[in-house]
Length: 238
Image (tube, rainbow, N blue to C red; front, side):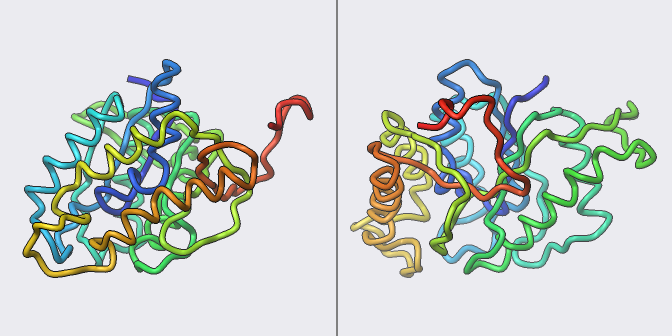
């Protein structure tokens, strides 16, 4: 299966929190979208890897993505080395996405910055023919995505461009709240974390609203580009 977009996150829920409005909009337009989680989030204070596995499946169904895979890297301890790069290269060559969305370049959680650079490096290396990979004994052709964009996470970074997700905010929040073990629940007796507060849940919506306000729409998601964004016509800008 060939994908139009592959969204990569260090942890299950990274994608939902950061770019799920964009994904929901593009799946609604008929684009093939996939999600790749690097870890199972096993170091998370709340819930278990098994619970998050099911939550990730539920969120994927809500967003209508075509495929979701998890590489099972060690939460908190994966590194940007050849072995980890090759595993991501195999996924890139398997699905041949035109666009890859990945973690924030810098962020509060150390896995986010690591995941960002690891994914970006793998996207470049995936285009080198002399790097040989195979899946199930079948050799893979080289493939390099046309664009790699980094979504914004905990830290409020200045985006290079924003995507209007008006009309898809409810779907975004539904996918986020599929992670019942992680986010605000007034009845939960689990330990409090920085992302389990009502304030954090509300911030997902008001940050999207603020980006939308700046460009004159209801809601938006921001991205950082590795290369200059280009348009065919000045009128492509809204």
